[in-house]
Length: 502
Image (tube, rainbow, N blue to C red; front, side, top):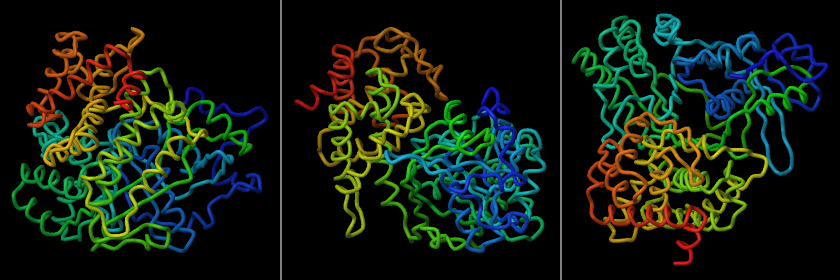
C-alpha cells in the first residue's frame, strides 16, 4: 500500500474518479462506455496487480463493445490495501503500458466494487451465490489454493482449511468461499457459476476442480457429487509481465494524469489469454477481445510454464545472487541471456504442441520481453513463493528429461540458485528477505546443513512437498549437488558462464 496515497504531483488537487474523468488529458483514454449502466457478472477472488493488468483489461474492452452485464466485483481475501486505494477512485485505475518507445496510459473501468473477504465474509458469499454471478475467477497465487503442489491434492491440515471446515459461514480461503457459495446455490436450486482459475498452476482448471471437490466432500458427499456433476472448471493460460508498482511509478503516472491515482498498474505491451471454452452459465464474447478459445489448453500452459516461467525463475534466483535488482538488468549480461535461452531449449523436447506452433519464435519473443528496459520487474519479486512454483516451472521438465534419458544440468543450476537463495544470505553476506510459505522450514534446513553443497542440496531435496519422489532420484541429487557446489565456489555470474562454456 502506498504510504501517502493522497499525495500526488505538485499542483494535482484531484483524485481519479468518475467525477473527474473529464479532467483527463486528451491523449489518455478513459472508459468508452457509461459505467452507470454496467452490472456485475463476474466476481474475482484475489484482485491484485496481475488481474488488473490482464483479465480486467479484457473485460474493459468487452464492456466498450456492449457486454454491459459483465462488470467485475473484486475481492481481496485478507488485505484491505487494494480496496482502500480503489474505493475513493470508484474502482478506476491507470494501466501504464511501458516499452522502449514510451508509456501508453489508459483508465480501466471494469471493476465496479471491491470487497475485503476477511472483513465481511458473509457479504462475499452472498455475491458469489447471487445468480447474476456467472463466472468466479481467481488469481490467488499458487499458495492460495491450500494444496500440495507436487500431488495436486488439498492440504487438509492447512490452517485455513481446518478453519473453513469448522466455520463454513466465515471462511478464510478461496476454496472455502467457493464451496460455501456453491452449497448455497445448490440449496436454492440455482445454477452454479463457472470457476475460472487464472493462476500459474499445472492444469489449473482440473487442479482447482479436484481441490474444490475434495474440500466439499469433507463437508458433504452429496455436495461434492453435485459440484463434480454440475460445476465446470475451464483451464487457462495467462501471460503478461506485471512488475510491482513503486512510489515513483505512482508519482509519474499521477503527474501524467494531472490527478492522483493511488494504485496504478505497470505492464508490458504483450498480453495473451488462452481459455478452454466450457461456460454452461454463459460468458462474454472473449474472442472479440483477443482471447483464444480452445478445447484443450494443456499444451499452451506447459509451453508457458516451461519456457517463460521457468526461465523467469532461473533469471530471478541467479540474477538476484549476481546482484541484479531487475530482470532487465540481468538480461543486459549476455551470459544470462544465453542461460535463459538454454533453459527454453532444454524444455522444448518435453512439449507436445499443436501443429504450426513455432517454439523458437516464442522463445525469442520471451527474451525480447525480458529485456524490456522500461519494465523494472524485480528479481526479488519473482523469487517469492519458490516452493510453490518450482514443481510446475522447473521440476516437471527435469522429470520428463530424465524419463527421456536427457541431461538436466541447465535446470539443476536453476534449482541450485533457488537453494542458495533460500538460505537467506546472499553472495556478499547480506540477508535475503525470503518470502515463501515454507521459509521457516527451509531456513532450519539451511541452518543445520550450512553452506556446504554436499549437505544442503540433499537436505532440501528431501522436502517431499516440493520435490516428491524426484528428490530421491540419484541423477537429480548428483546434478543439483554439483550445480550448487559450483555456485558456492564461483558465484552466480561465473557459474552461469562456465556452464555455458561447458
